[in-house]
Length: 584
Image (cartoon, rainbow, N blue to C red):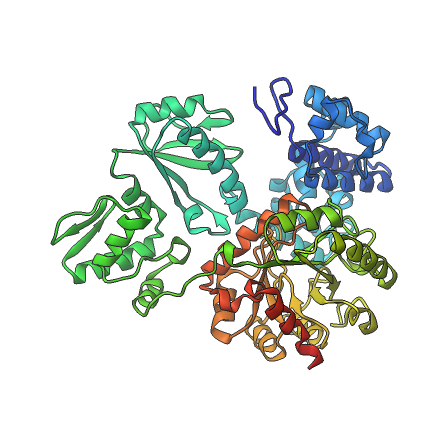
């Protein structure tokens, strides 16, 4: 019996994430079945609220409490959720599943398709992603209603983005799987080290290795005991291939004393190890999967301190953090010295978070309370402006009403400064969604592109630069618009954009949402080289998503950034001074 949030339900436990996923699936099936669009939209909003809700819904249901007190959940939905928690499914959901092909759900999740176009494809005999790819290849899709050349091109790009995740995982997904498995193994006294892409904190993880001090047989037996783990190989295999929540992991058995050097080798990547090997040969040494050998013996203890540090010292290099290990260029840069990379502890405030005033799941008070408990000195409340289509979206009147609530909450939390902000849409012509007289009342203005992505490189670049030229703008959010596995970046002259941000003194965001992680490491390196100010934000839409900050920091470190280059690593007084630059 599995357990989530202290609640056990039959053979399956339902946390908020799983409940929300099931409600979202029901909404998608309803849309495919042609149900009322307002009802579908209600269920979709409810699914988002449920996923982001900061208390266990299963606990609320099993305690007999009134579920309708949760915002967005009425009596009808409360009954459905109760059925889900008590039985693991619901009759309505199973009825829809019985008559709608499973592949259609996958189609609706392809950016550019949606329920209406998926129904059109279904009528044409296309009921899976594989058949959609074939229809695009054969150009038979072009004759269907709503599938003109621009739509077909958009869908083709979306499918390419999806392919980038085949057999791979988002970093956050890999983290959850690894934490579950390593927690189980450490609880049984296994010495281990995590390696592969996940240790280098790459945004898409292809290789995840857990190197364990154990025999193959003992490791196999332990893994067999671990719940929610699927074994893919045969007894005696080394590595032992497993799958946890859809994430593929290799369990590598090694003798005690070789855990860390083997983990260093498996962390790679090959181009980086080749550069280290070439450097080792210059000093009569040899890099091997189990350490470094040559004059003076063999180092087989390669933990970061002191083992790996000792190995790098023999190579006349500083210890290179895993986030920087990419290729030979990294080694060349390390010869000249490494920066003191930013850490999570350096961040003084989160400048991008949403509340129930727009599409967040937690109230303003709850978000402030949680941020204060994390030790932040300041936060910015940045709910959406109206044109995103997010309900309700804050216009001038709503921002004034929110200001009154911020003032009340601020009085109860004197230790953290609550900055009034807004994430304002950049319209297609580069103007902003709110008037300047409204923006001037805010402490901080964030701007973002949320629509009309199909522009030429020059038009999109000009659009964003025009928005940044507004002297009231402080931060450009998720600059390239990518969503990993769903949408590639829109065409953009990134260097020209960053040069404009530098000249206008507009900070550029690295967005910690695991699906975005925008800018990427190369863009952040360019920020470093050009002298562009960067902010690291969570883009939290719930209390739990405040943890996204860790992923933004991973990206900043991969971009070689130091605290001095991060605007929200400054103390409040210095940060306020920067915000005041526009009135100088």
